[in-house]
Amino acid sequence: MPCTVLVTGANGFLGQHVVKLLQERAEFVDYIVLLDKDMFVQKLDYKPRVTAECITGSITDPDVVRKAVQKVNCVIHLAGVIGVTTFPDAKAMKDVNVKGTALLLEACVESNVGIFISCSTQDTVLTMADQIDIDETLCVEPHDLGFGDYAKTKLEAEHIVLGKHGTQLKNGQRLQTIVLRPGLMYGELDSIFVTSVIRATRTNGGVLYHFGSPQAFGQYVYVGNVGWGFVCALRKLFHGNFHGGETYFVGDTTPLMRLFEFNELFIKLNGGRLASRPIPYLLMLMVVLLLEWIVWLISPVKEINLPVTSTAVRYANKKWSYSYDKAKRQLQYSPLYDWDESYHRSSKFYKSIK
Image 1 (cartoon, rainbow, N blue to C red):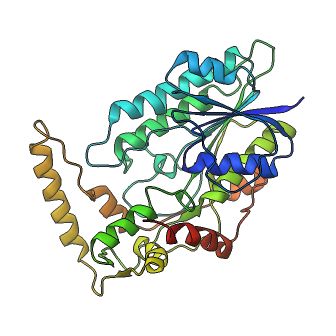
Image 2 (cartoon, one colour):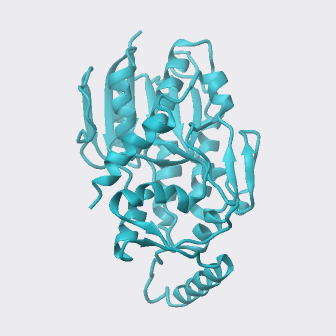
């Protein structure tokens, strides 16, 4: 049986890399359907190997979703709404991350799509306390999650995806679902993480102001390796005697380091540098909390998203790392690119940021 794949969110940061790797390294894939709210435009350098059909629309639209699953037997679900600003769009996150995922799963059951691989996030277990070398056995209550509504909607989506695992399809087979949790991604086409820091540094005259404990560190992952994780998961589910129903962290050999030290690796490519002295952490936190209180008071009249949130300040001050040994063992995942190659590829992109 040929492997035909639907990729949702195909035009996005991670989506572009997943599509590239499906074209270049997934020899068992014969046909790809690309679904995104924006028309898919190839933004990475590769030569397409198999036919790819583009569908434009939202995963919240039942007609679009039903059309998207008609020609496939596997789904890689990447579409989602990220909201970590002062006033995130909670409704959009609920509609897309939760209701859209549920709608897509129902369409898969109706159309005998047997494999469903969903993209979640590290934030579904991330609190503001230190968390070192955690694994998939960790469970966090929704009210303890650091990134609020975004993390809650992604956690709810995880439960929906795993709850559908084993559902009997009309053809008598059973739906296999798994969830991948990438860390904080960097690399080509990044528009949120390092790219925003580069632009903010440029606005500040080439200086990046920093704060947080010298002992703090975080775990980051190159987007190309995350994309490869989805290909490994697809290969395992399609070929292997493996039935899913679980979550997996996806990481790589990017060194653990402070958030600002990591960003410094890339801002210096554009002539930027860290400020000579850090801002005291507690002072930074108190100022941001005060500003959040002020903008909350005036929010009935006008919502103002601050350039930094108290959650982001706390995140920069914590110790955070996870193990991806489970993905290595069960999905036969191994990073496709080592740290040197990941940094080299990313540097070429970040140098071009305007």
